[in-house]
Length: 510
Image (cartoon, rainbow, N blue to C red):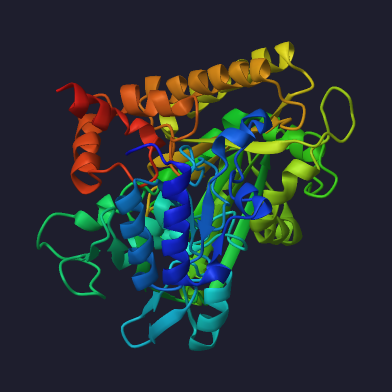
């Protein structure tokens, strides 16, 4: 990738306006600034370094192709961006250039209720899609915490995880096929074999998976065919309070080994998480003072399936020390699962008992059940040391573990420690200490045989080096670099992400 000159930039802006129209090629400061960061904590002292040069909003595959070809012609970077709800900096323009905002591409192209698929553009919001599907008694069962605000393209870019993935699969399991514009402007369709609506094929390599979770480094999705599901007849959330984390951990074990297939989602809070929720005036659901941890499980299915297994769910939870908190608390907590994206604005500082405006950092590792307790303690110690050093800048918001295995309620857990970060009073020195803490958290995950990220992608500063050079050390990162160089010879697509610039440095040195 060449360095963009002012004359190159002026020329490409003119070309983009001819292709998309003046209205959808934006160079105003505020339009560029609001697309510099995403929901992940951001060092405000870095803002100017990451400001894109221009923002475009294409409406079709043809317009995306025009943008990509122009970028290659002038050597200008491209960064695909959906709603900016991501927590791994995938949409952050590390090399400035063009941000391709896909939110205009939000059309439903086809609903096939017979074969239970829907074909859409990537800018569509999950909540809006399901409003349209509801009268057909169908739904798209991708259910992240950010459900009301995210868009499909962003979910594809980060290989998103779903709260009900144990019952219905996660985003990668729900994509039948996609149309993708590659980094050189070629339009390809990837899926299970050649059929647009086929869920399983043995023909060819699993190319589709290459274009899920690439964080915008391998192309821009412009059309997606999705798998749908019948809306469940019955939904039963059950919330158990426990006196210790060990009891909660044992309840998870019981459900892991139960073989209950109607479990759509399951999670546990630890003591730090319960303490944080008690400090939040809006999010807390009242629980007895003795409550230190909690487990929630939610069943989805037919009336017969849910009713038939309900008693066994209560037996497993109560036999390990859990206390059922009743229908109101159980249904209220499950219903609020999408509301917690706002918590950064309500977290009451633990030491000062005052409201402290902080953003939410979520370190979302994939950890096996047997390693949860050790990982939890090591993580909290890392954050305790950071808070001791910078008490006004960080806060421990606790850990929770969500079952992560698609289509089955056993296996790995999305194990998340949530950390409050005071962005507005950040300094380069404090930011450097934060990055070191993130590295330490990531290394704990790898040391315990886990993955740095189940839900968002290990691409943020700090964790990305551990992702590439430690977690993916046994040949995977080397193969990623070869694939990147092959598909993106000019290093146009989201350069700098996942340390993939290494591929071009090595090529130049060869």
